[in-house]
Structure formats: structure tokens, C-alpha cells
Image (tube, rainbow, N blue to C red; front, side, top):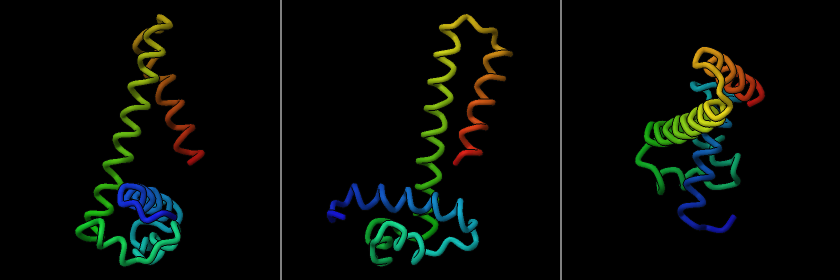
Length: 102
């Protein structure tokens, strides 16, 4: 991996979510997170203030992605003339399927 700061941060954030999903929050070590994206674990502390900072930023990124998906699906469903109740049902069904597939 090229040692570009932005790419390293993005890789560490993605790895954090992946490791937490696979190992659980309490078992997500910085060593495992770094090794998942083939980086030394010292890189975490060069790009984030702490493990807690890394986790917080990873969850913020995931929250933003989820909010964008919700907004996108609401706009699509709104254009199709579907009632609010039906839109919410369809929207959360799609989100649930994506979460289960994750």
C-alpha cells in the first residue's frame, strides 16, 4: 500500500469496522486492525489520537454512509409516489438486508 496519509486513514477506518464486525468490539485489537490492511500497528497512532479516537471516527464514517443510503432510498421512493408508511417499510427492509449481508 502506498504510504498516503488519507489512504492509510481510510484503510484503517474500514479495517476497524471489519474487525469489529468479525471479532466483536472487545476483541478488536489495534494489531488485528492494522494487520487486516497490511500496515504496522504504529500507523494507527500516527493517524489517530488513540484507539478510542479510531473507533469513534470509524463509527462516524459508518453513520454517514448509512444516512446517505437512507436519504438516497427515500428520494427514490418519493419519486415513485409511494406513501410514507410504505416508504419506511421498504427503506428499512432494504437497509436490514444490507446489514445482514454485511
